[in-house]
Length: 178
Image (cartoon, rainbow, N blue to C red; front, side):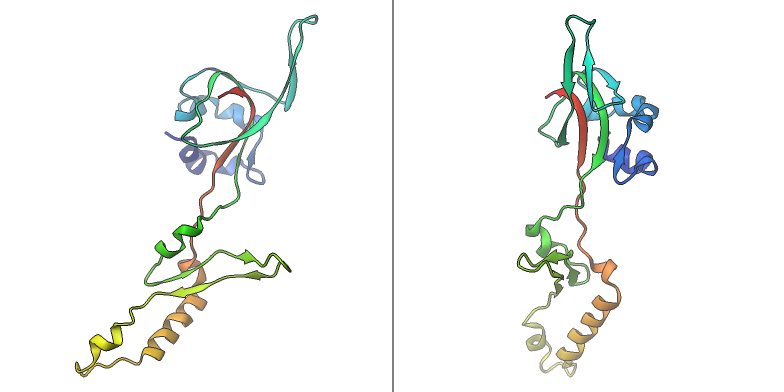
């Protein structure tokens, strides 16, 4: 199981502002160890502070935790000191906008004009310019304006249905070898 699947199904109620703190990580340590991302590690230690010291006095070694985004290229190894797990904001791949049509329509995520930070979205309707041509002579000549206006009305009234879905990644914070 991937850690993202575990987070979506089991752990999400224990997130605060898209972050899981050590108190809750300790409850799910056994399940985390079953995830693919942690399969090659020697030990998983949940730490209560992001920065810590290990040693016996004279040979103390200080550690500062860091964030990494987990993806398929990252393999953790050795002992992992885990301080937190968080989810990234919802990220959108602009190349996928034109592939996520539902019923020939879509609503893009909110974007912002870089000059004045005004939010905006696109409503997109996909249709074939040959549609009207194919209907000529069938006795069913459509009112193209009405068809497009009806679809736009549906988009406006049901924006969530047609909204593009983004991806949320998983970030971990701790001390680990990659």
